[in-house]
Image 1 (cartoon, helix red, strand yellow):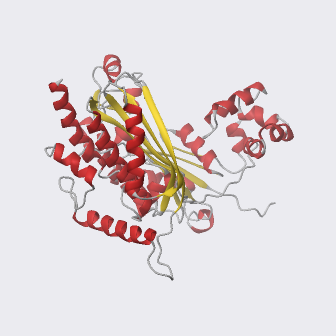
Image 2 (cartoon, rainbow, N blue to C red; image 1 turned 180 degrees about the horizontal axis):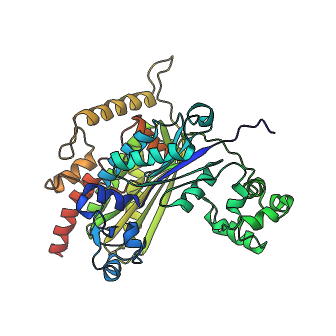
Image 3 (cartoon, one colour; image 1 turned 135 degrees about the vertical axis):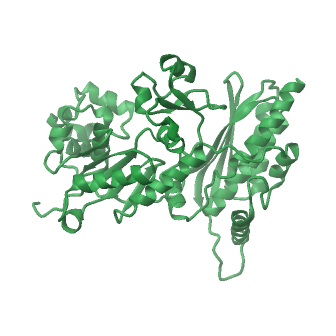
Length: 452
């Protein structure tokens, strides 16, 4: 096995990304404790805090008023998600210049394959100098501090980054087992609480404990994952980096309305416009749904939910919207509490063939052509204040309130598939226009509150 090529995977992670973005947008925040607030008005809970704020005890999930109490000179910033997307794209555009394989996994972190660098690039430099050059360039050009870890697998590289923050750490070949020895198994990305408890019951709290256990015991207990864990703990896991863009298994929307909505017809109109948007996104990705679910959360955080299973997978607005309206009216019958949040999910997805056929144009093909044309028109001619094309539900929302023209962007947490598409321009951002309807609904809701 001496001739085996050892993979070298680099993990890069933006430090306190949202807070760092706010500092990049406003140089006056440099050197100050900064945190970003979530919630409806940007003053709910802390969703990101920089290192200066963390030194005072400010943590993610803390109430913003509590953060202000323990760090009175700190600065609360409301999120600017469109800017975070832009900065993220700039960061990845720098990274993709340094490796033939780039795999983004979230808005602020990704992996690069450096396996062949030692024979091609690193002859005149060292891995540390090369990576620090990348990090310094991102800090200089994008104005975002980043940390990085280099190791033989993506999971180990991520652990190296966590250990390095802020900075860079390389786990050299042969040093993997020693690095892992005293680290808790809880640090492994993707490990669930059930597996943690099962390992703890076996006396395995650290990777060093796992390395000392019989491999067959772990295989009997956890199957192939147990064997992989044993190899990982012993520094023998040599994992290649692969970019896999898989089809969705579900597409969903989770929206907290700007104000608790007492008008159920207004809430239904919003739900229908969201379903129309999700259905269009499905067809652009050549998918269709077998299941539809709807969950309504009320002002007191109680919930009501329902679902519908179609006899055949569906892709048409009329059919899916009719099912959603039926679920909605069934859930809201007898209810009286204002609506706080609407969650919609299309699931059990399968491929939708919209390609031309030998025997003429099918219904699916016609829908595909229509979606392509609609998407192209909206891409070229739509503006936030004036969409090029609208559905009936979307027009109804606009007629309710035409005053709010600049929507608040949604939080850009997205799966790898969407990040890849955004980076390389293979699809438009599916959340780009969603905020339109939320801001228009906000004014309608506010007016209704004054009437009641």
